[in-house]
Structure formats: C-alpha cells, structure tokens
Image 1 (cartoon, helix red, strand yellow):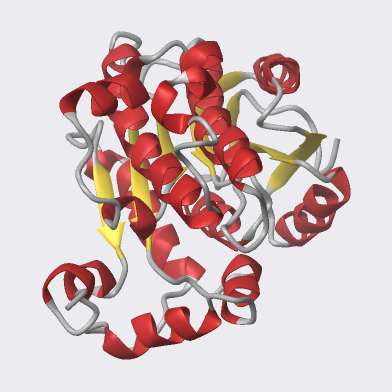
Image 2: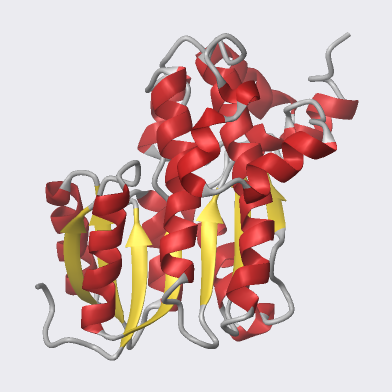
Length: 281
C-alpha cells in the first residue's frame, strides 16, 4: 500500500492512463484511491505522482477481460472500505489490438467491471465509464441488437451472432461496436445500480491528447485523426483535464440527477461526421 493507512471511502480507478488520473484528482480528495492497471508497474508510477500530490493510494494489477481478476480487485476494494466511486478508463484502441482483443477488453471487460462493482457500490455512490465518440459513428443497430448489447448476461455477451468474426472483420468496427455497447450497458446497469441508491454514466470523448491518441496519430489512421481535428468546430484535440471536469460533474453532487446517460464530448467531430465536412458524400 502507498500513502498511509486504509481509508473508509474508496474510489476505484481501473486504467492508470491520463483520463482516469484526471477524473480521480477531481473526486478523490480525502478518500482512498485503489488504482488498478493491467501492468502494476504503471499503476505504481502513477500512484507515486498522486501521493506526492497529497492523495492516498493503493495499487493492484487487474485484467478486465478476466472475471477472476476483476473479482479480485473488487474484493481488494471492499477490504479497504466502502466503495463510493468507480472510474473505468481501461481499454485498447483500433491501432493497438485485433478485433477479438478489442471485443474482449473494451466490450466484455466493461460489462464485467460494471456487473462486479454494481454488486458492491455504496448507497450514494457513483461511477463513470470512458467510452468513445466512435460509438456515435456506428450506423443504427436494430432494437434487438441494442437490447442484446445492453442486457445479455456478461459471460454470454461475446457469443452474440453479430459479434462473431465473420461479422466483425476489422478493428475499427469492433471498437465502434464495443463503444456503442458501453453506453447501452451503462444505461441498463443504471437501473440495477439505482436499486442500491447509486448512479453510473459514461463519457464518449473525441480525440484527447493521451498516449493512446498519440498511437493513433502516428499509426495507419493518423491522417484520418488529423482530418477530424481540422474539420471539427473546436479545431483542436481535447485534454484529459477537460474530461476530468465532466467526470467530476457526473460523479459529484451537481450531477445527482444524471444516471444512465452518455456525454459526447468531441469538439464537434461527430456533428461534422454526420452533417458537416466529414460527412460521407
């Protein structure tokens, strides 16, 4: 454990990247952060920075694609105190992984985290899931597909017919389906979390300057990313701190009437995609 004694009020952060950190800084003062990442050395490095800034932190390794691993971090969180907050910011991008890995980490992993932490979240607690603008760029799904993504039991999710590899043939499609699934799953889980007196929402950021975004900018889709930045109303990428501001709203008292919602914050990229200069001709 880093940063002192066990606290009674725990904020769990899954994914030690810039966005998770930014939200955690806004909502975790006076609370204890349990910081989980696939690579615990990454979590330890971020923990040191947070501790130097006055936060109390414990770290853990977690693989969101493994139920046993997610259950283990839930048990660790409960052992530290009352779980009052969840920030789920783990994921992989289209340039980082195969369709199979994206569906398992971004879609299944998110559903698993929401289910497991929904079993222990405290009355008055709140959660936020980091999704993506990509979910808003997928053409409409059928009502049945929407319901399936939202409510299929987690361990059956990857067996859905329209998620099979003869249907999902590239990483971008897998990513868009996963992110659409994230916002739908958050909506369904908000009903269950509400029975415990807790709230959960998602944020769909656009291009936010993080290491993941830099991977995309320097990868095969880099030109497309730069075109999105040039064509959007904001004319720039976003910052993790801007996402942190929205995350703090959703998790705090000013967001008490928000649950089951998805906040699209992309500088206008999606608007330009459907109705502006990025629209397919």
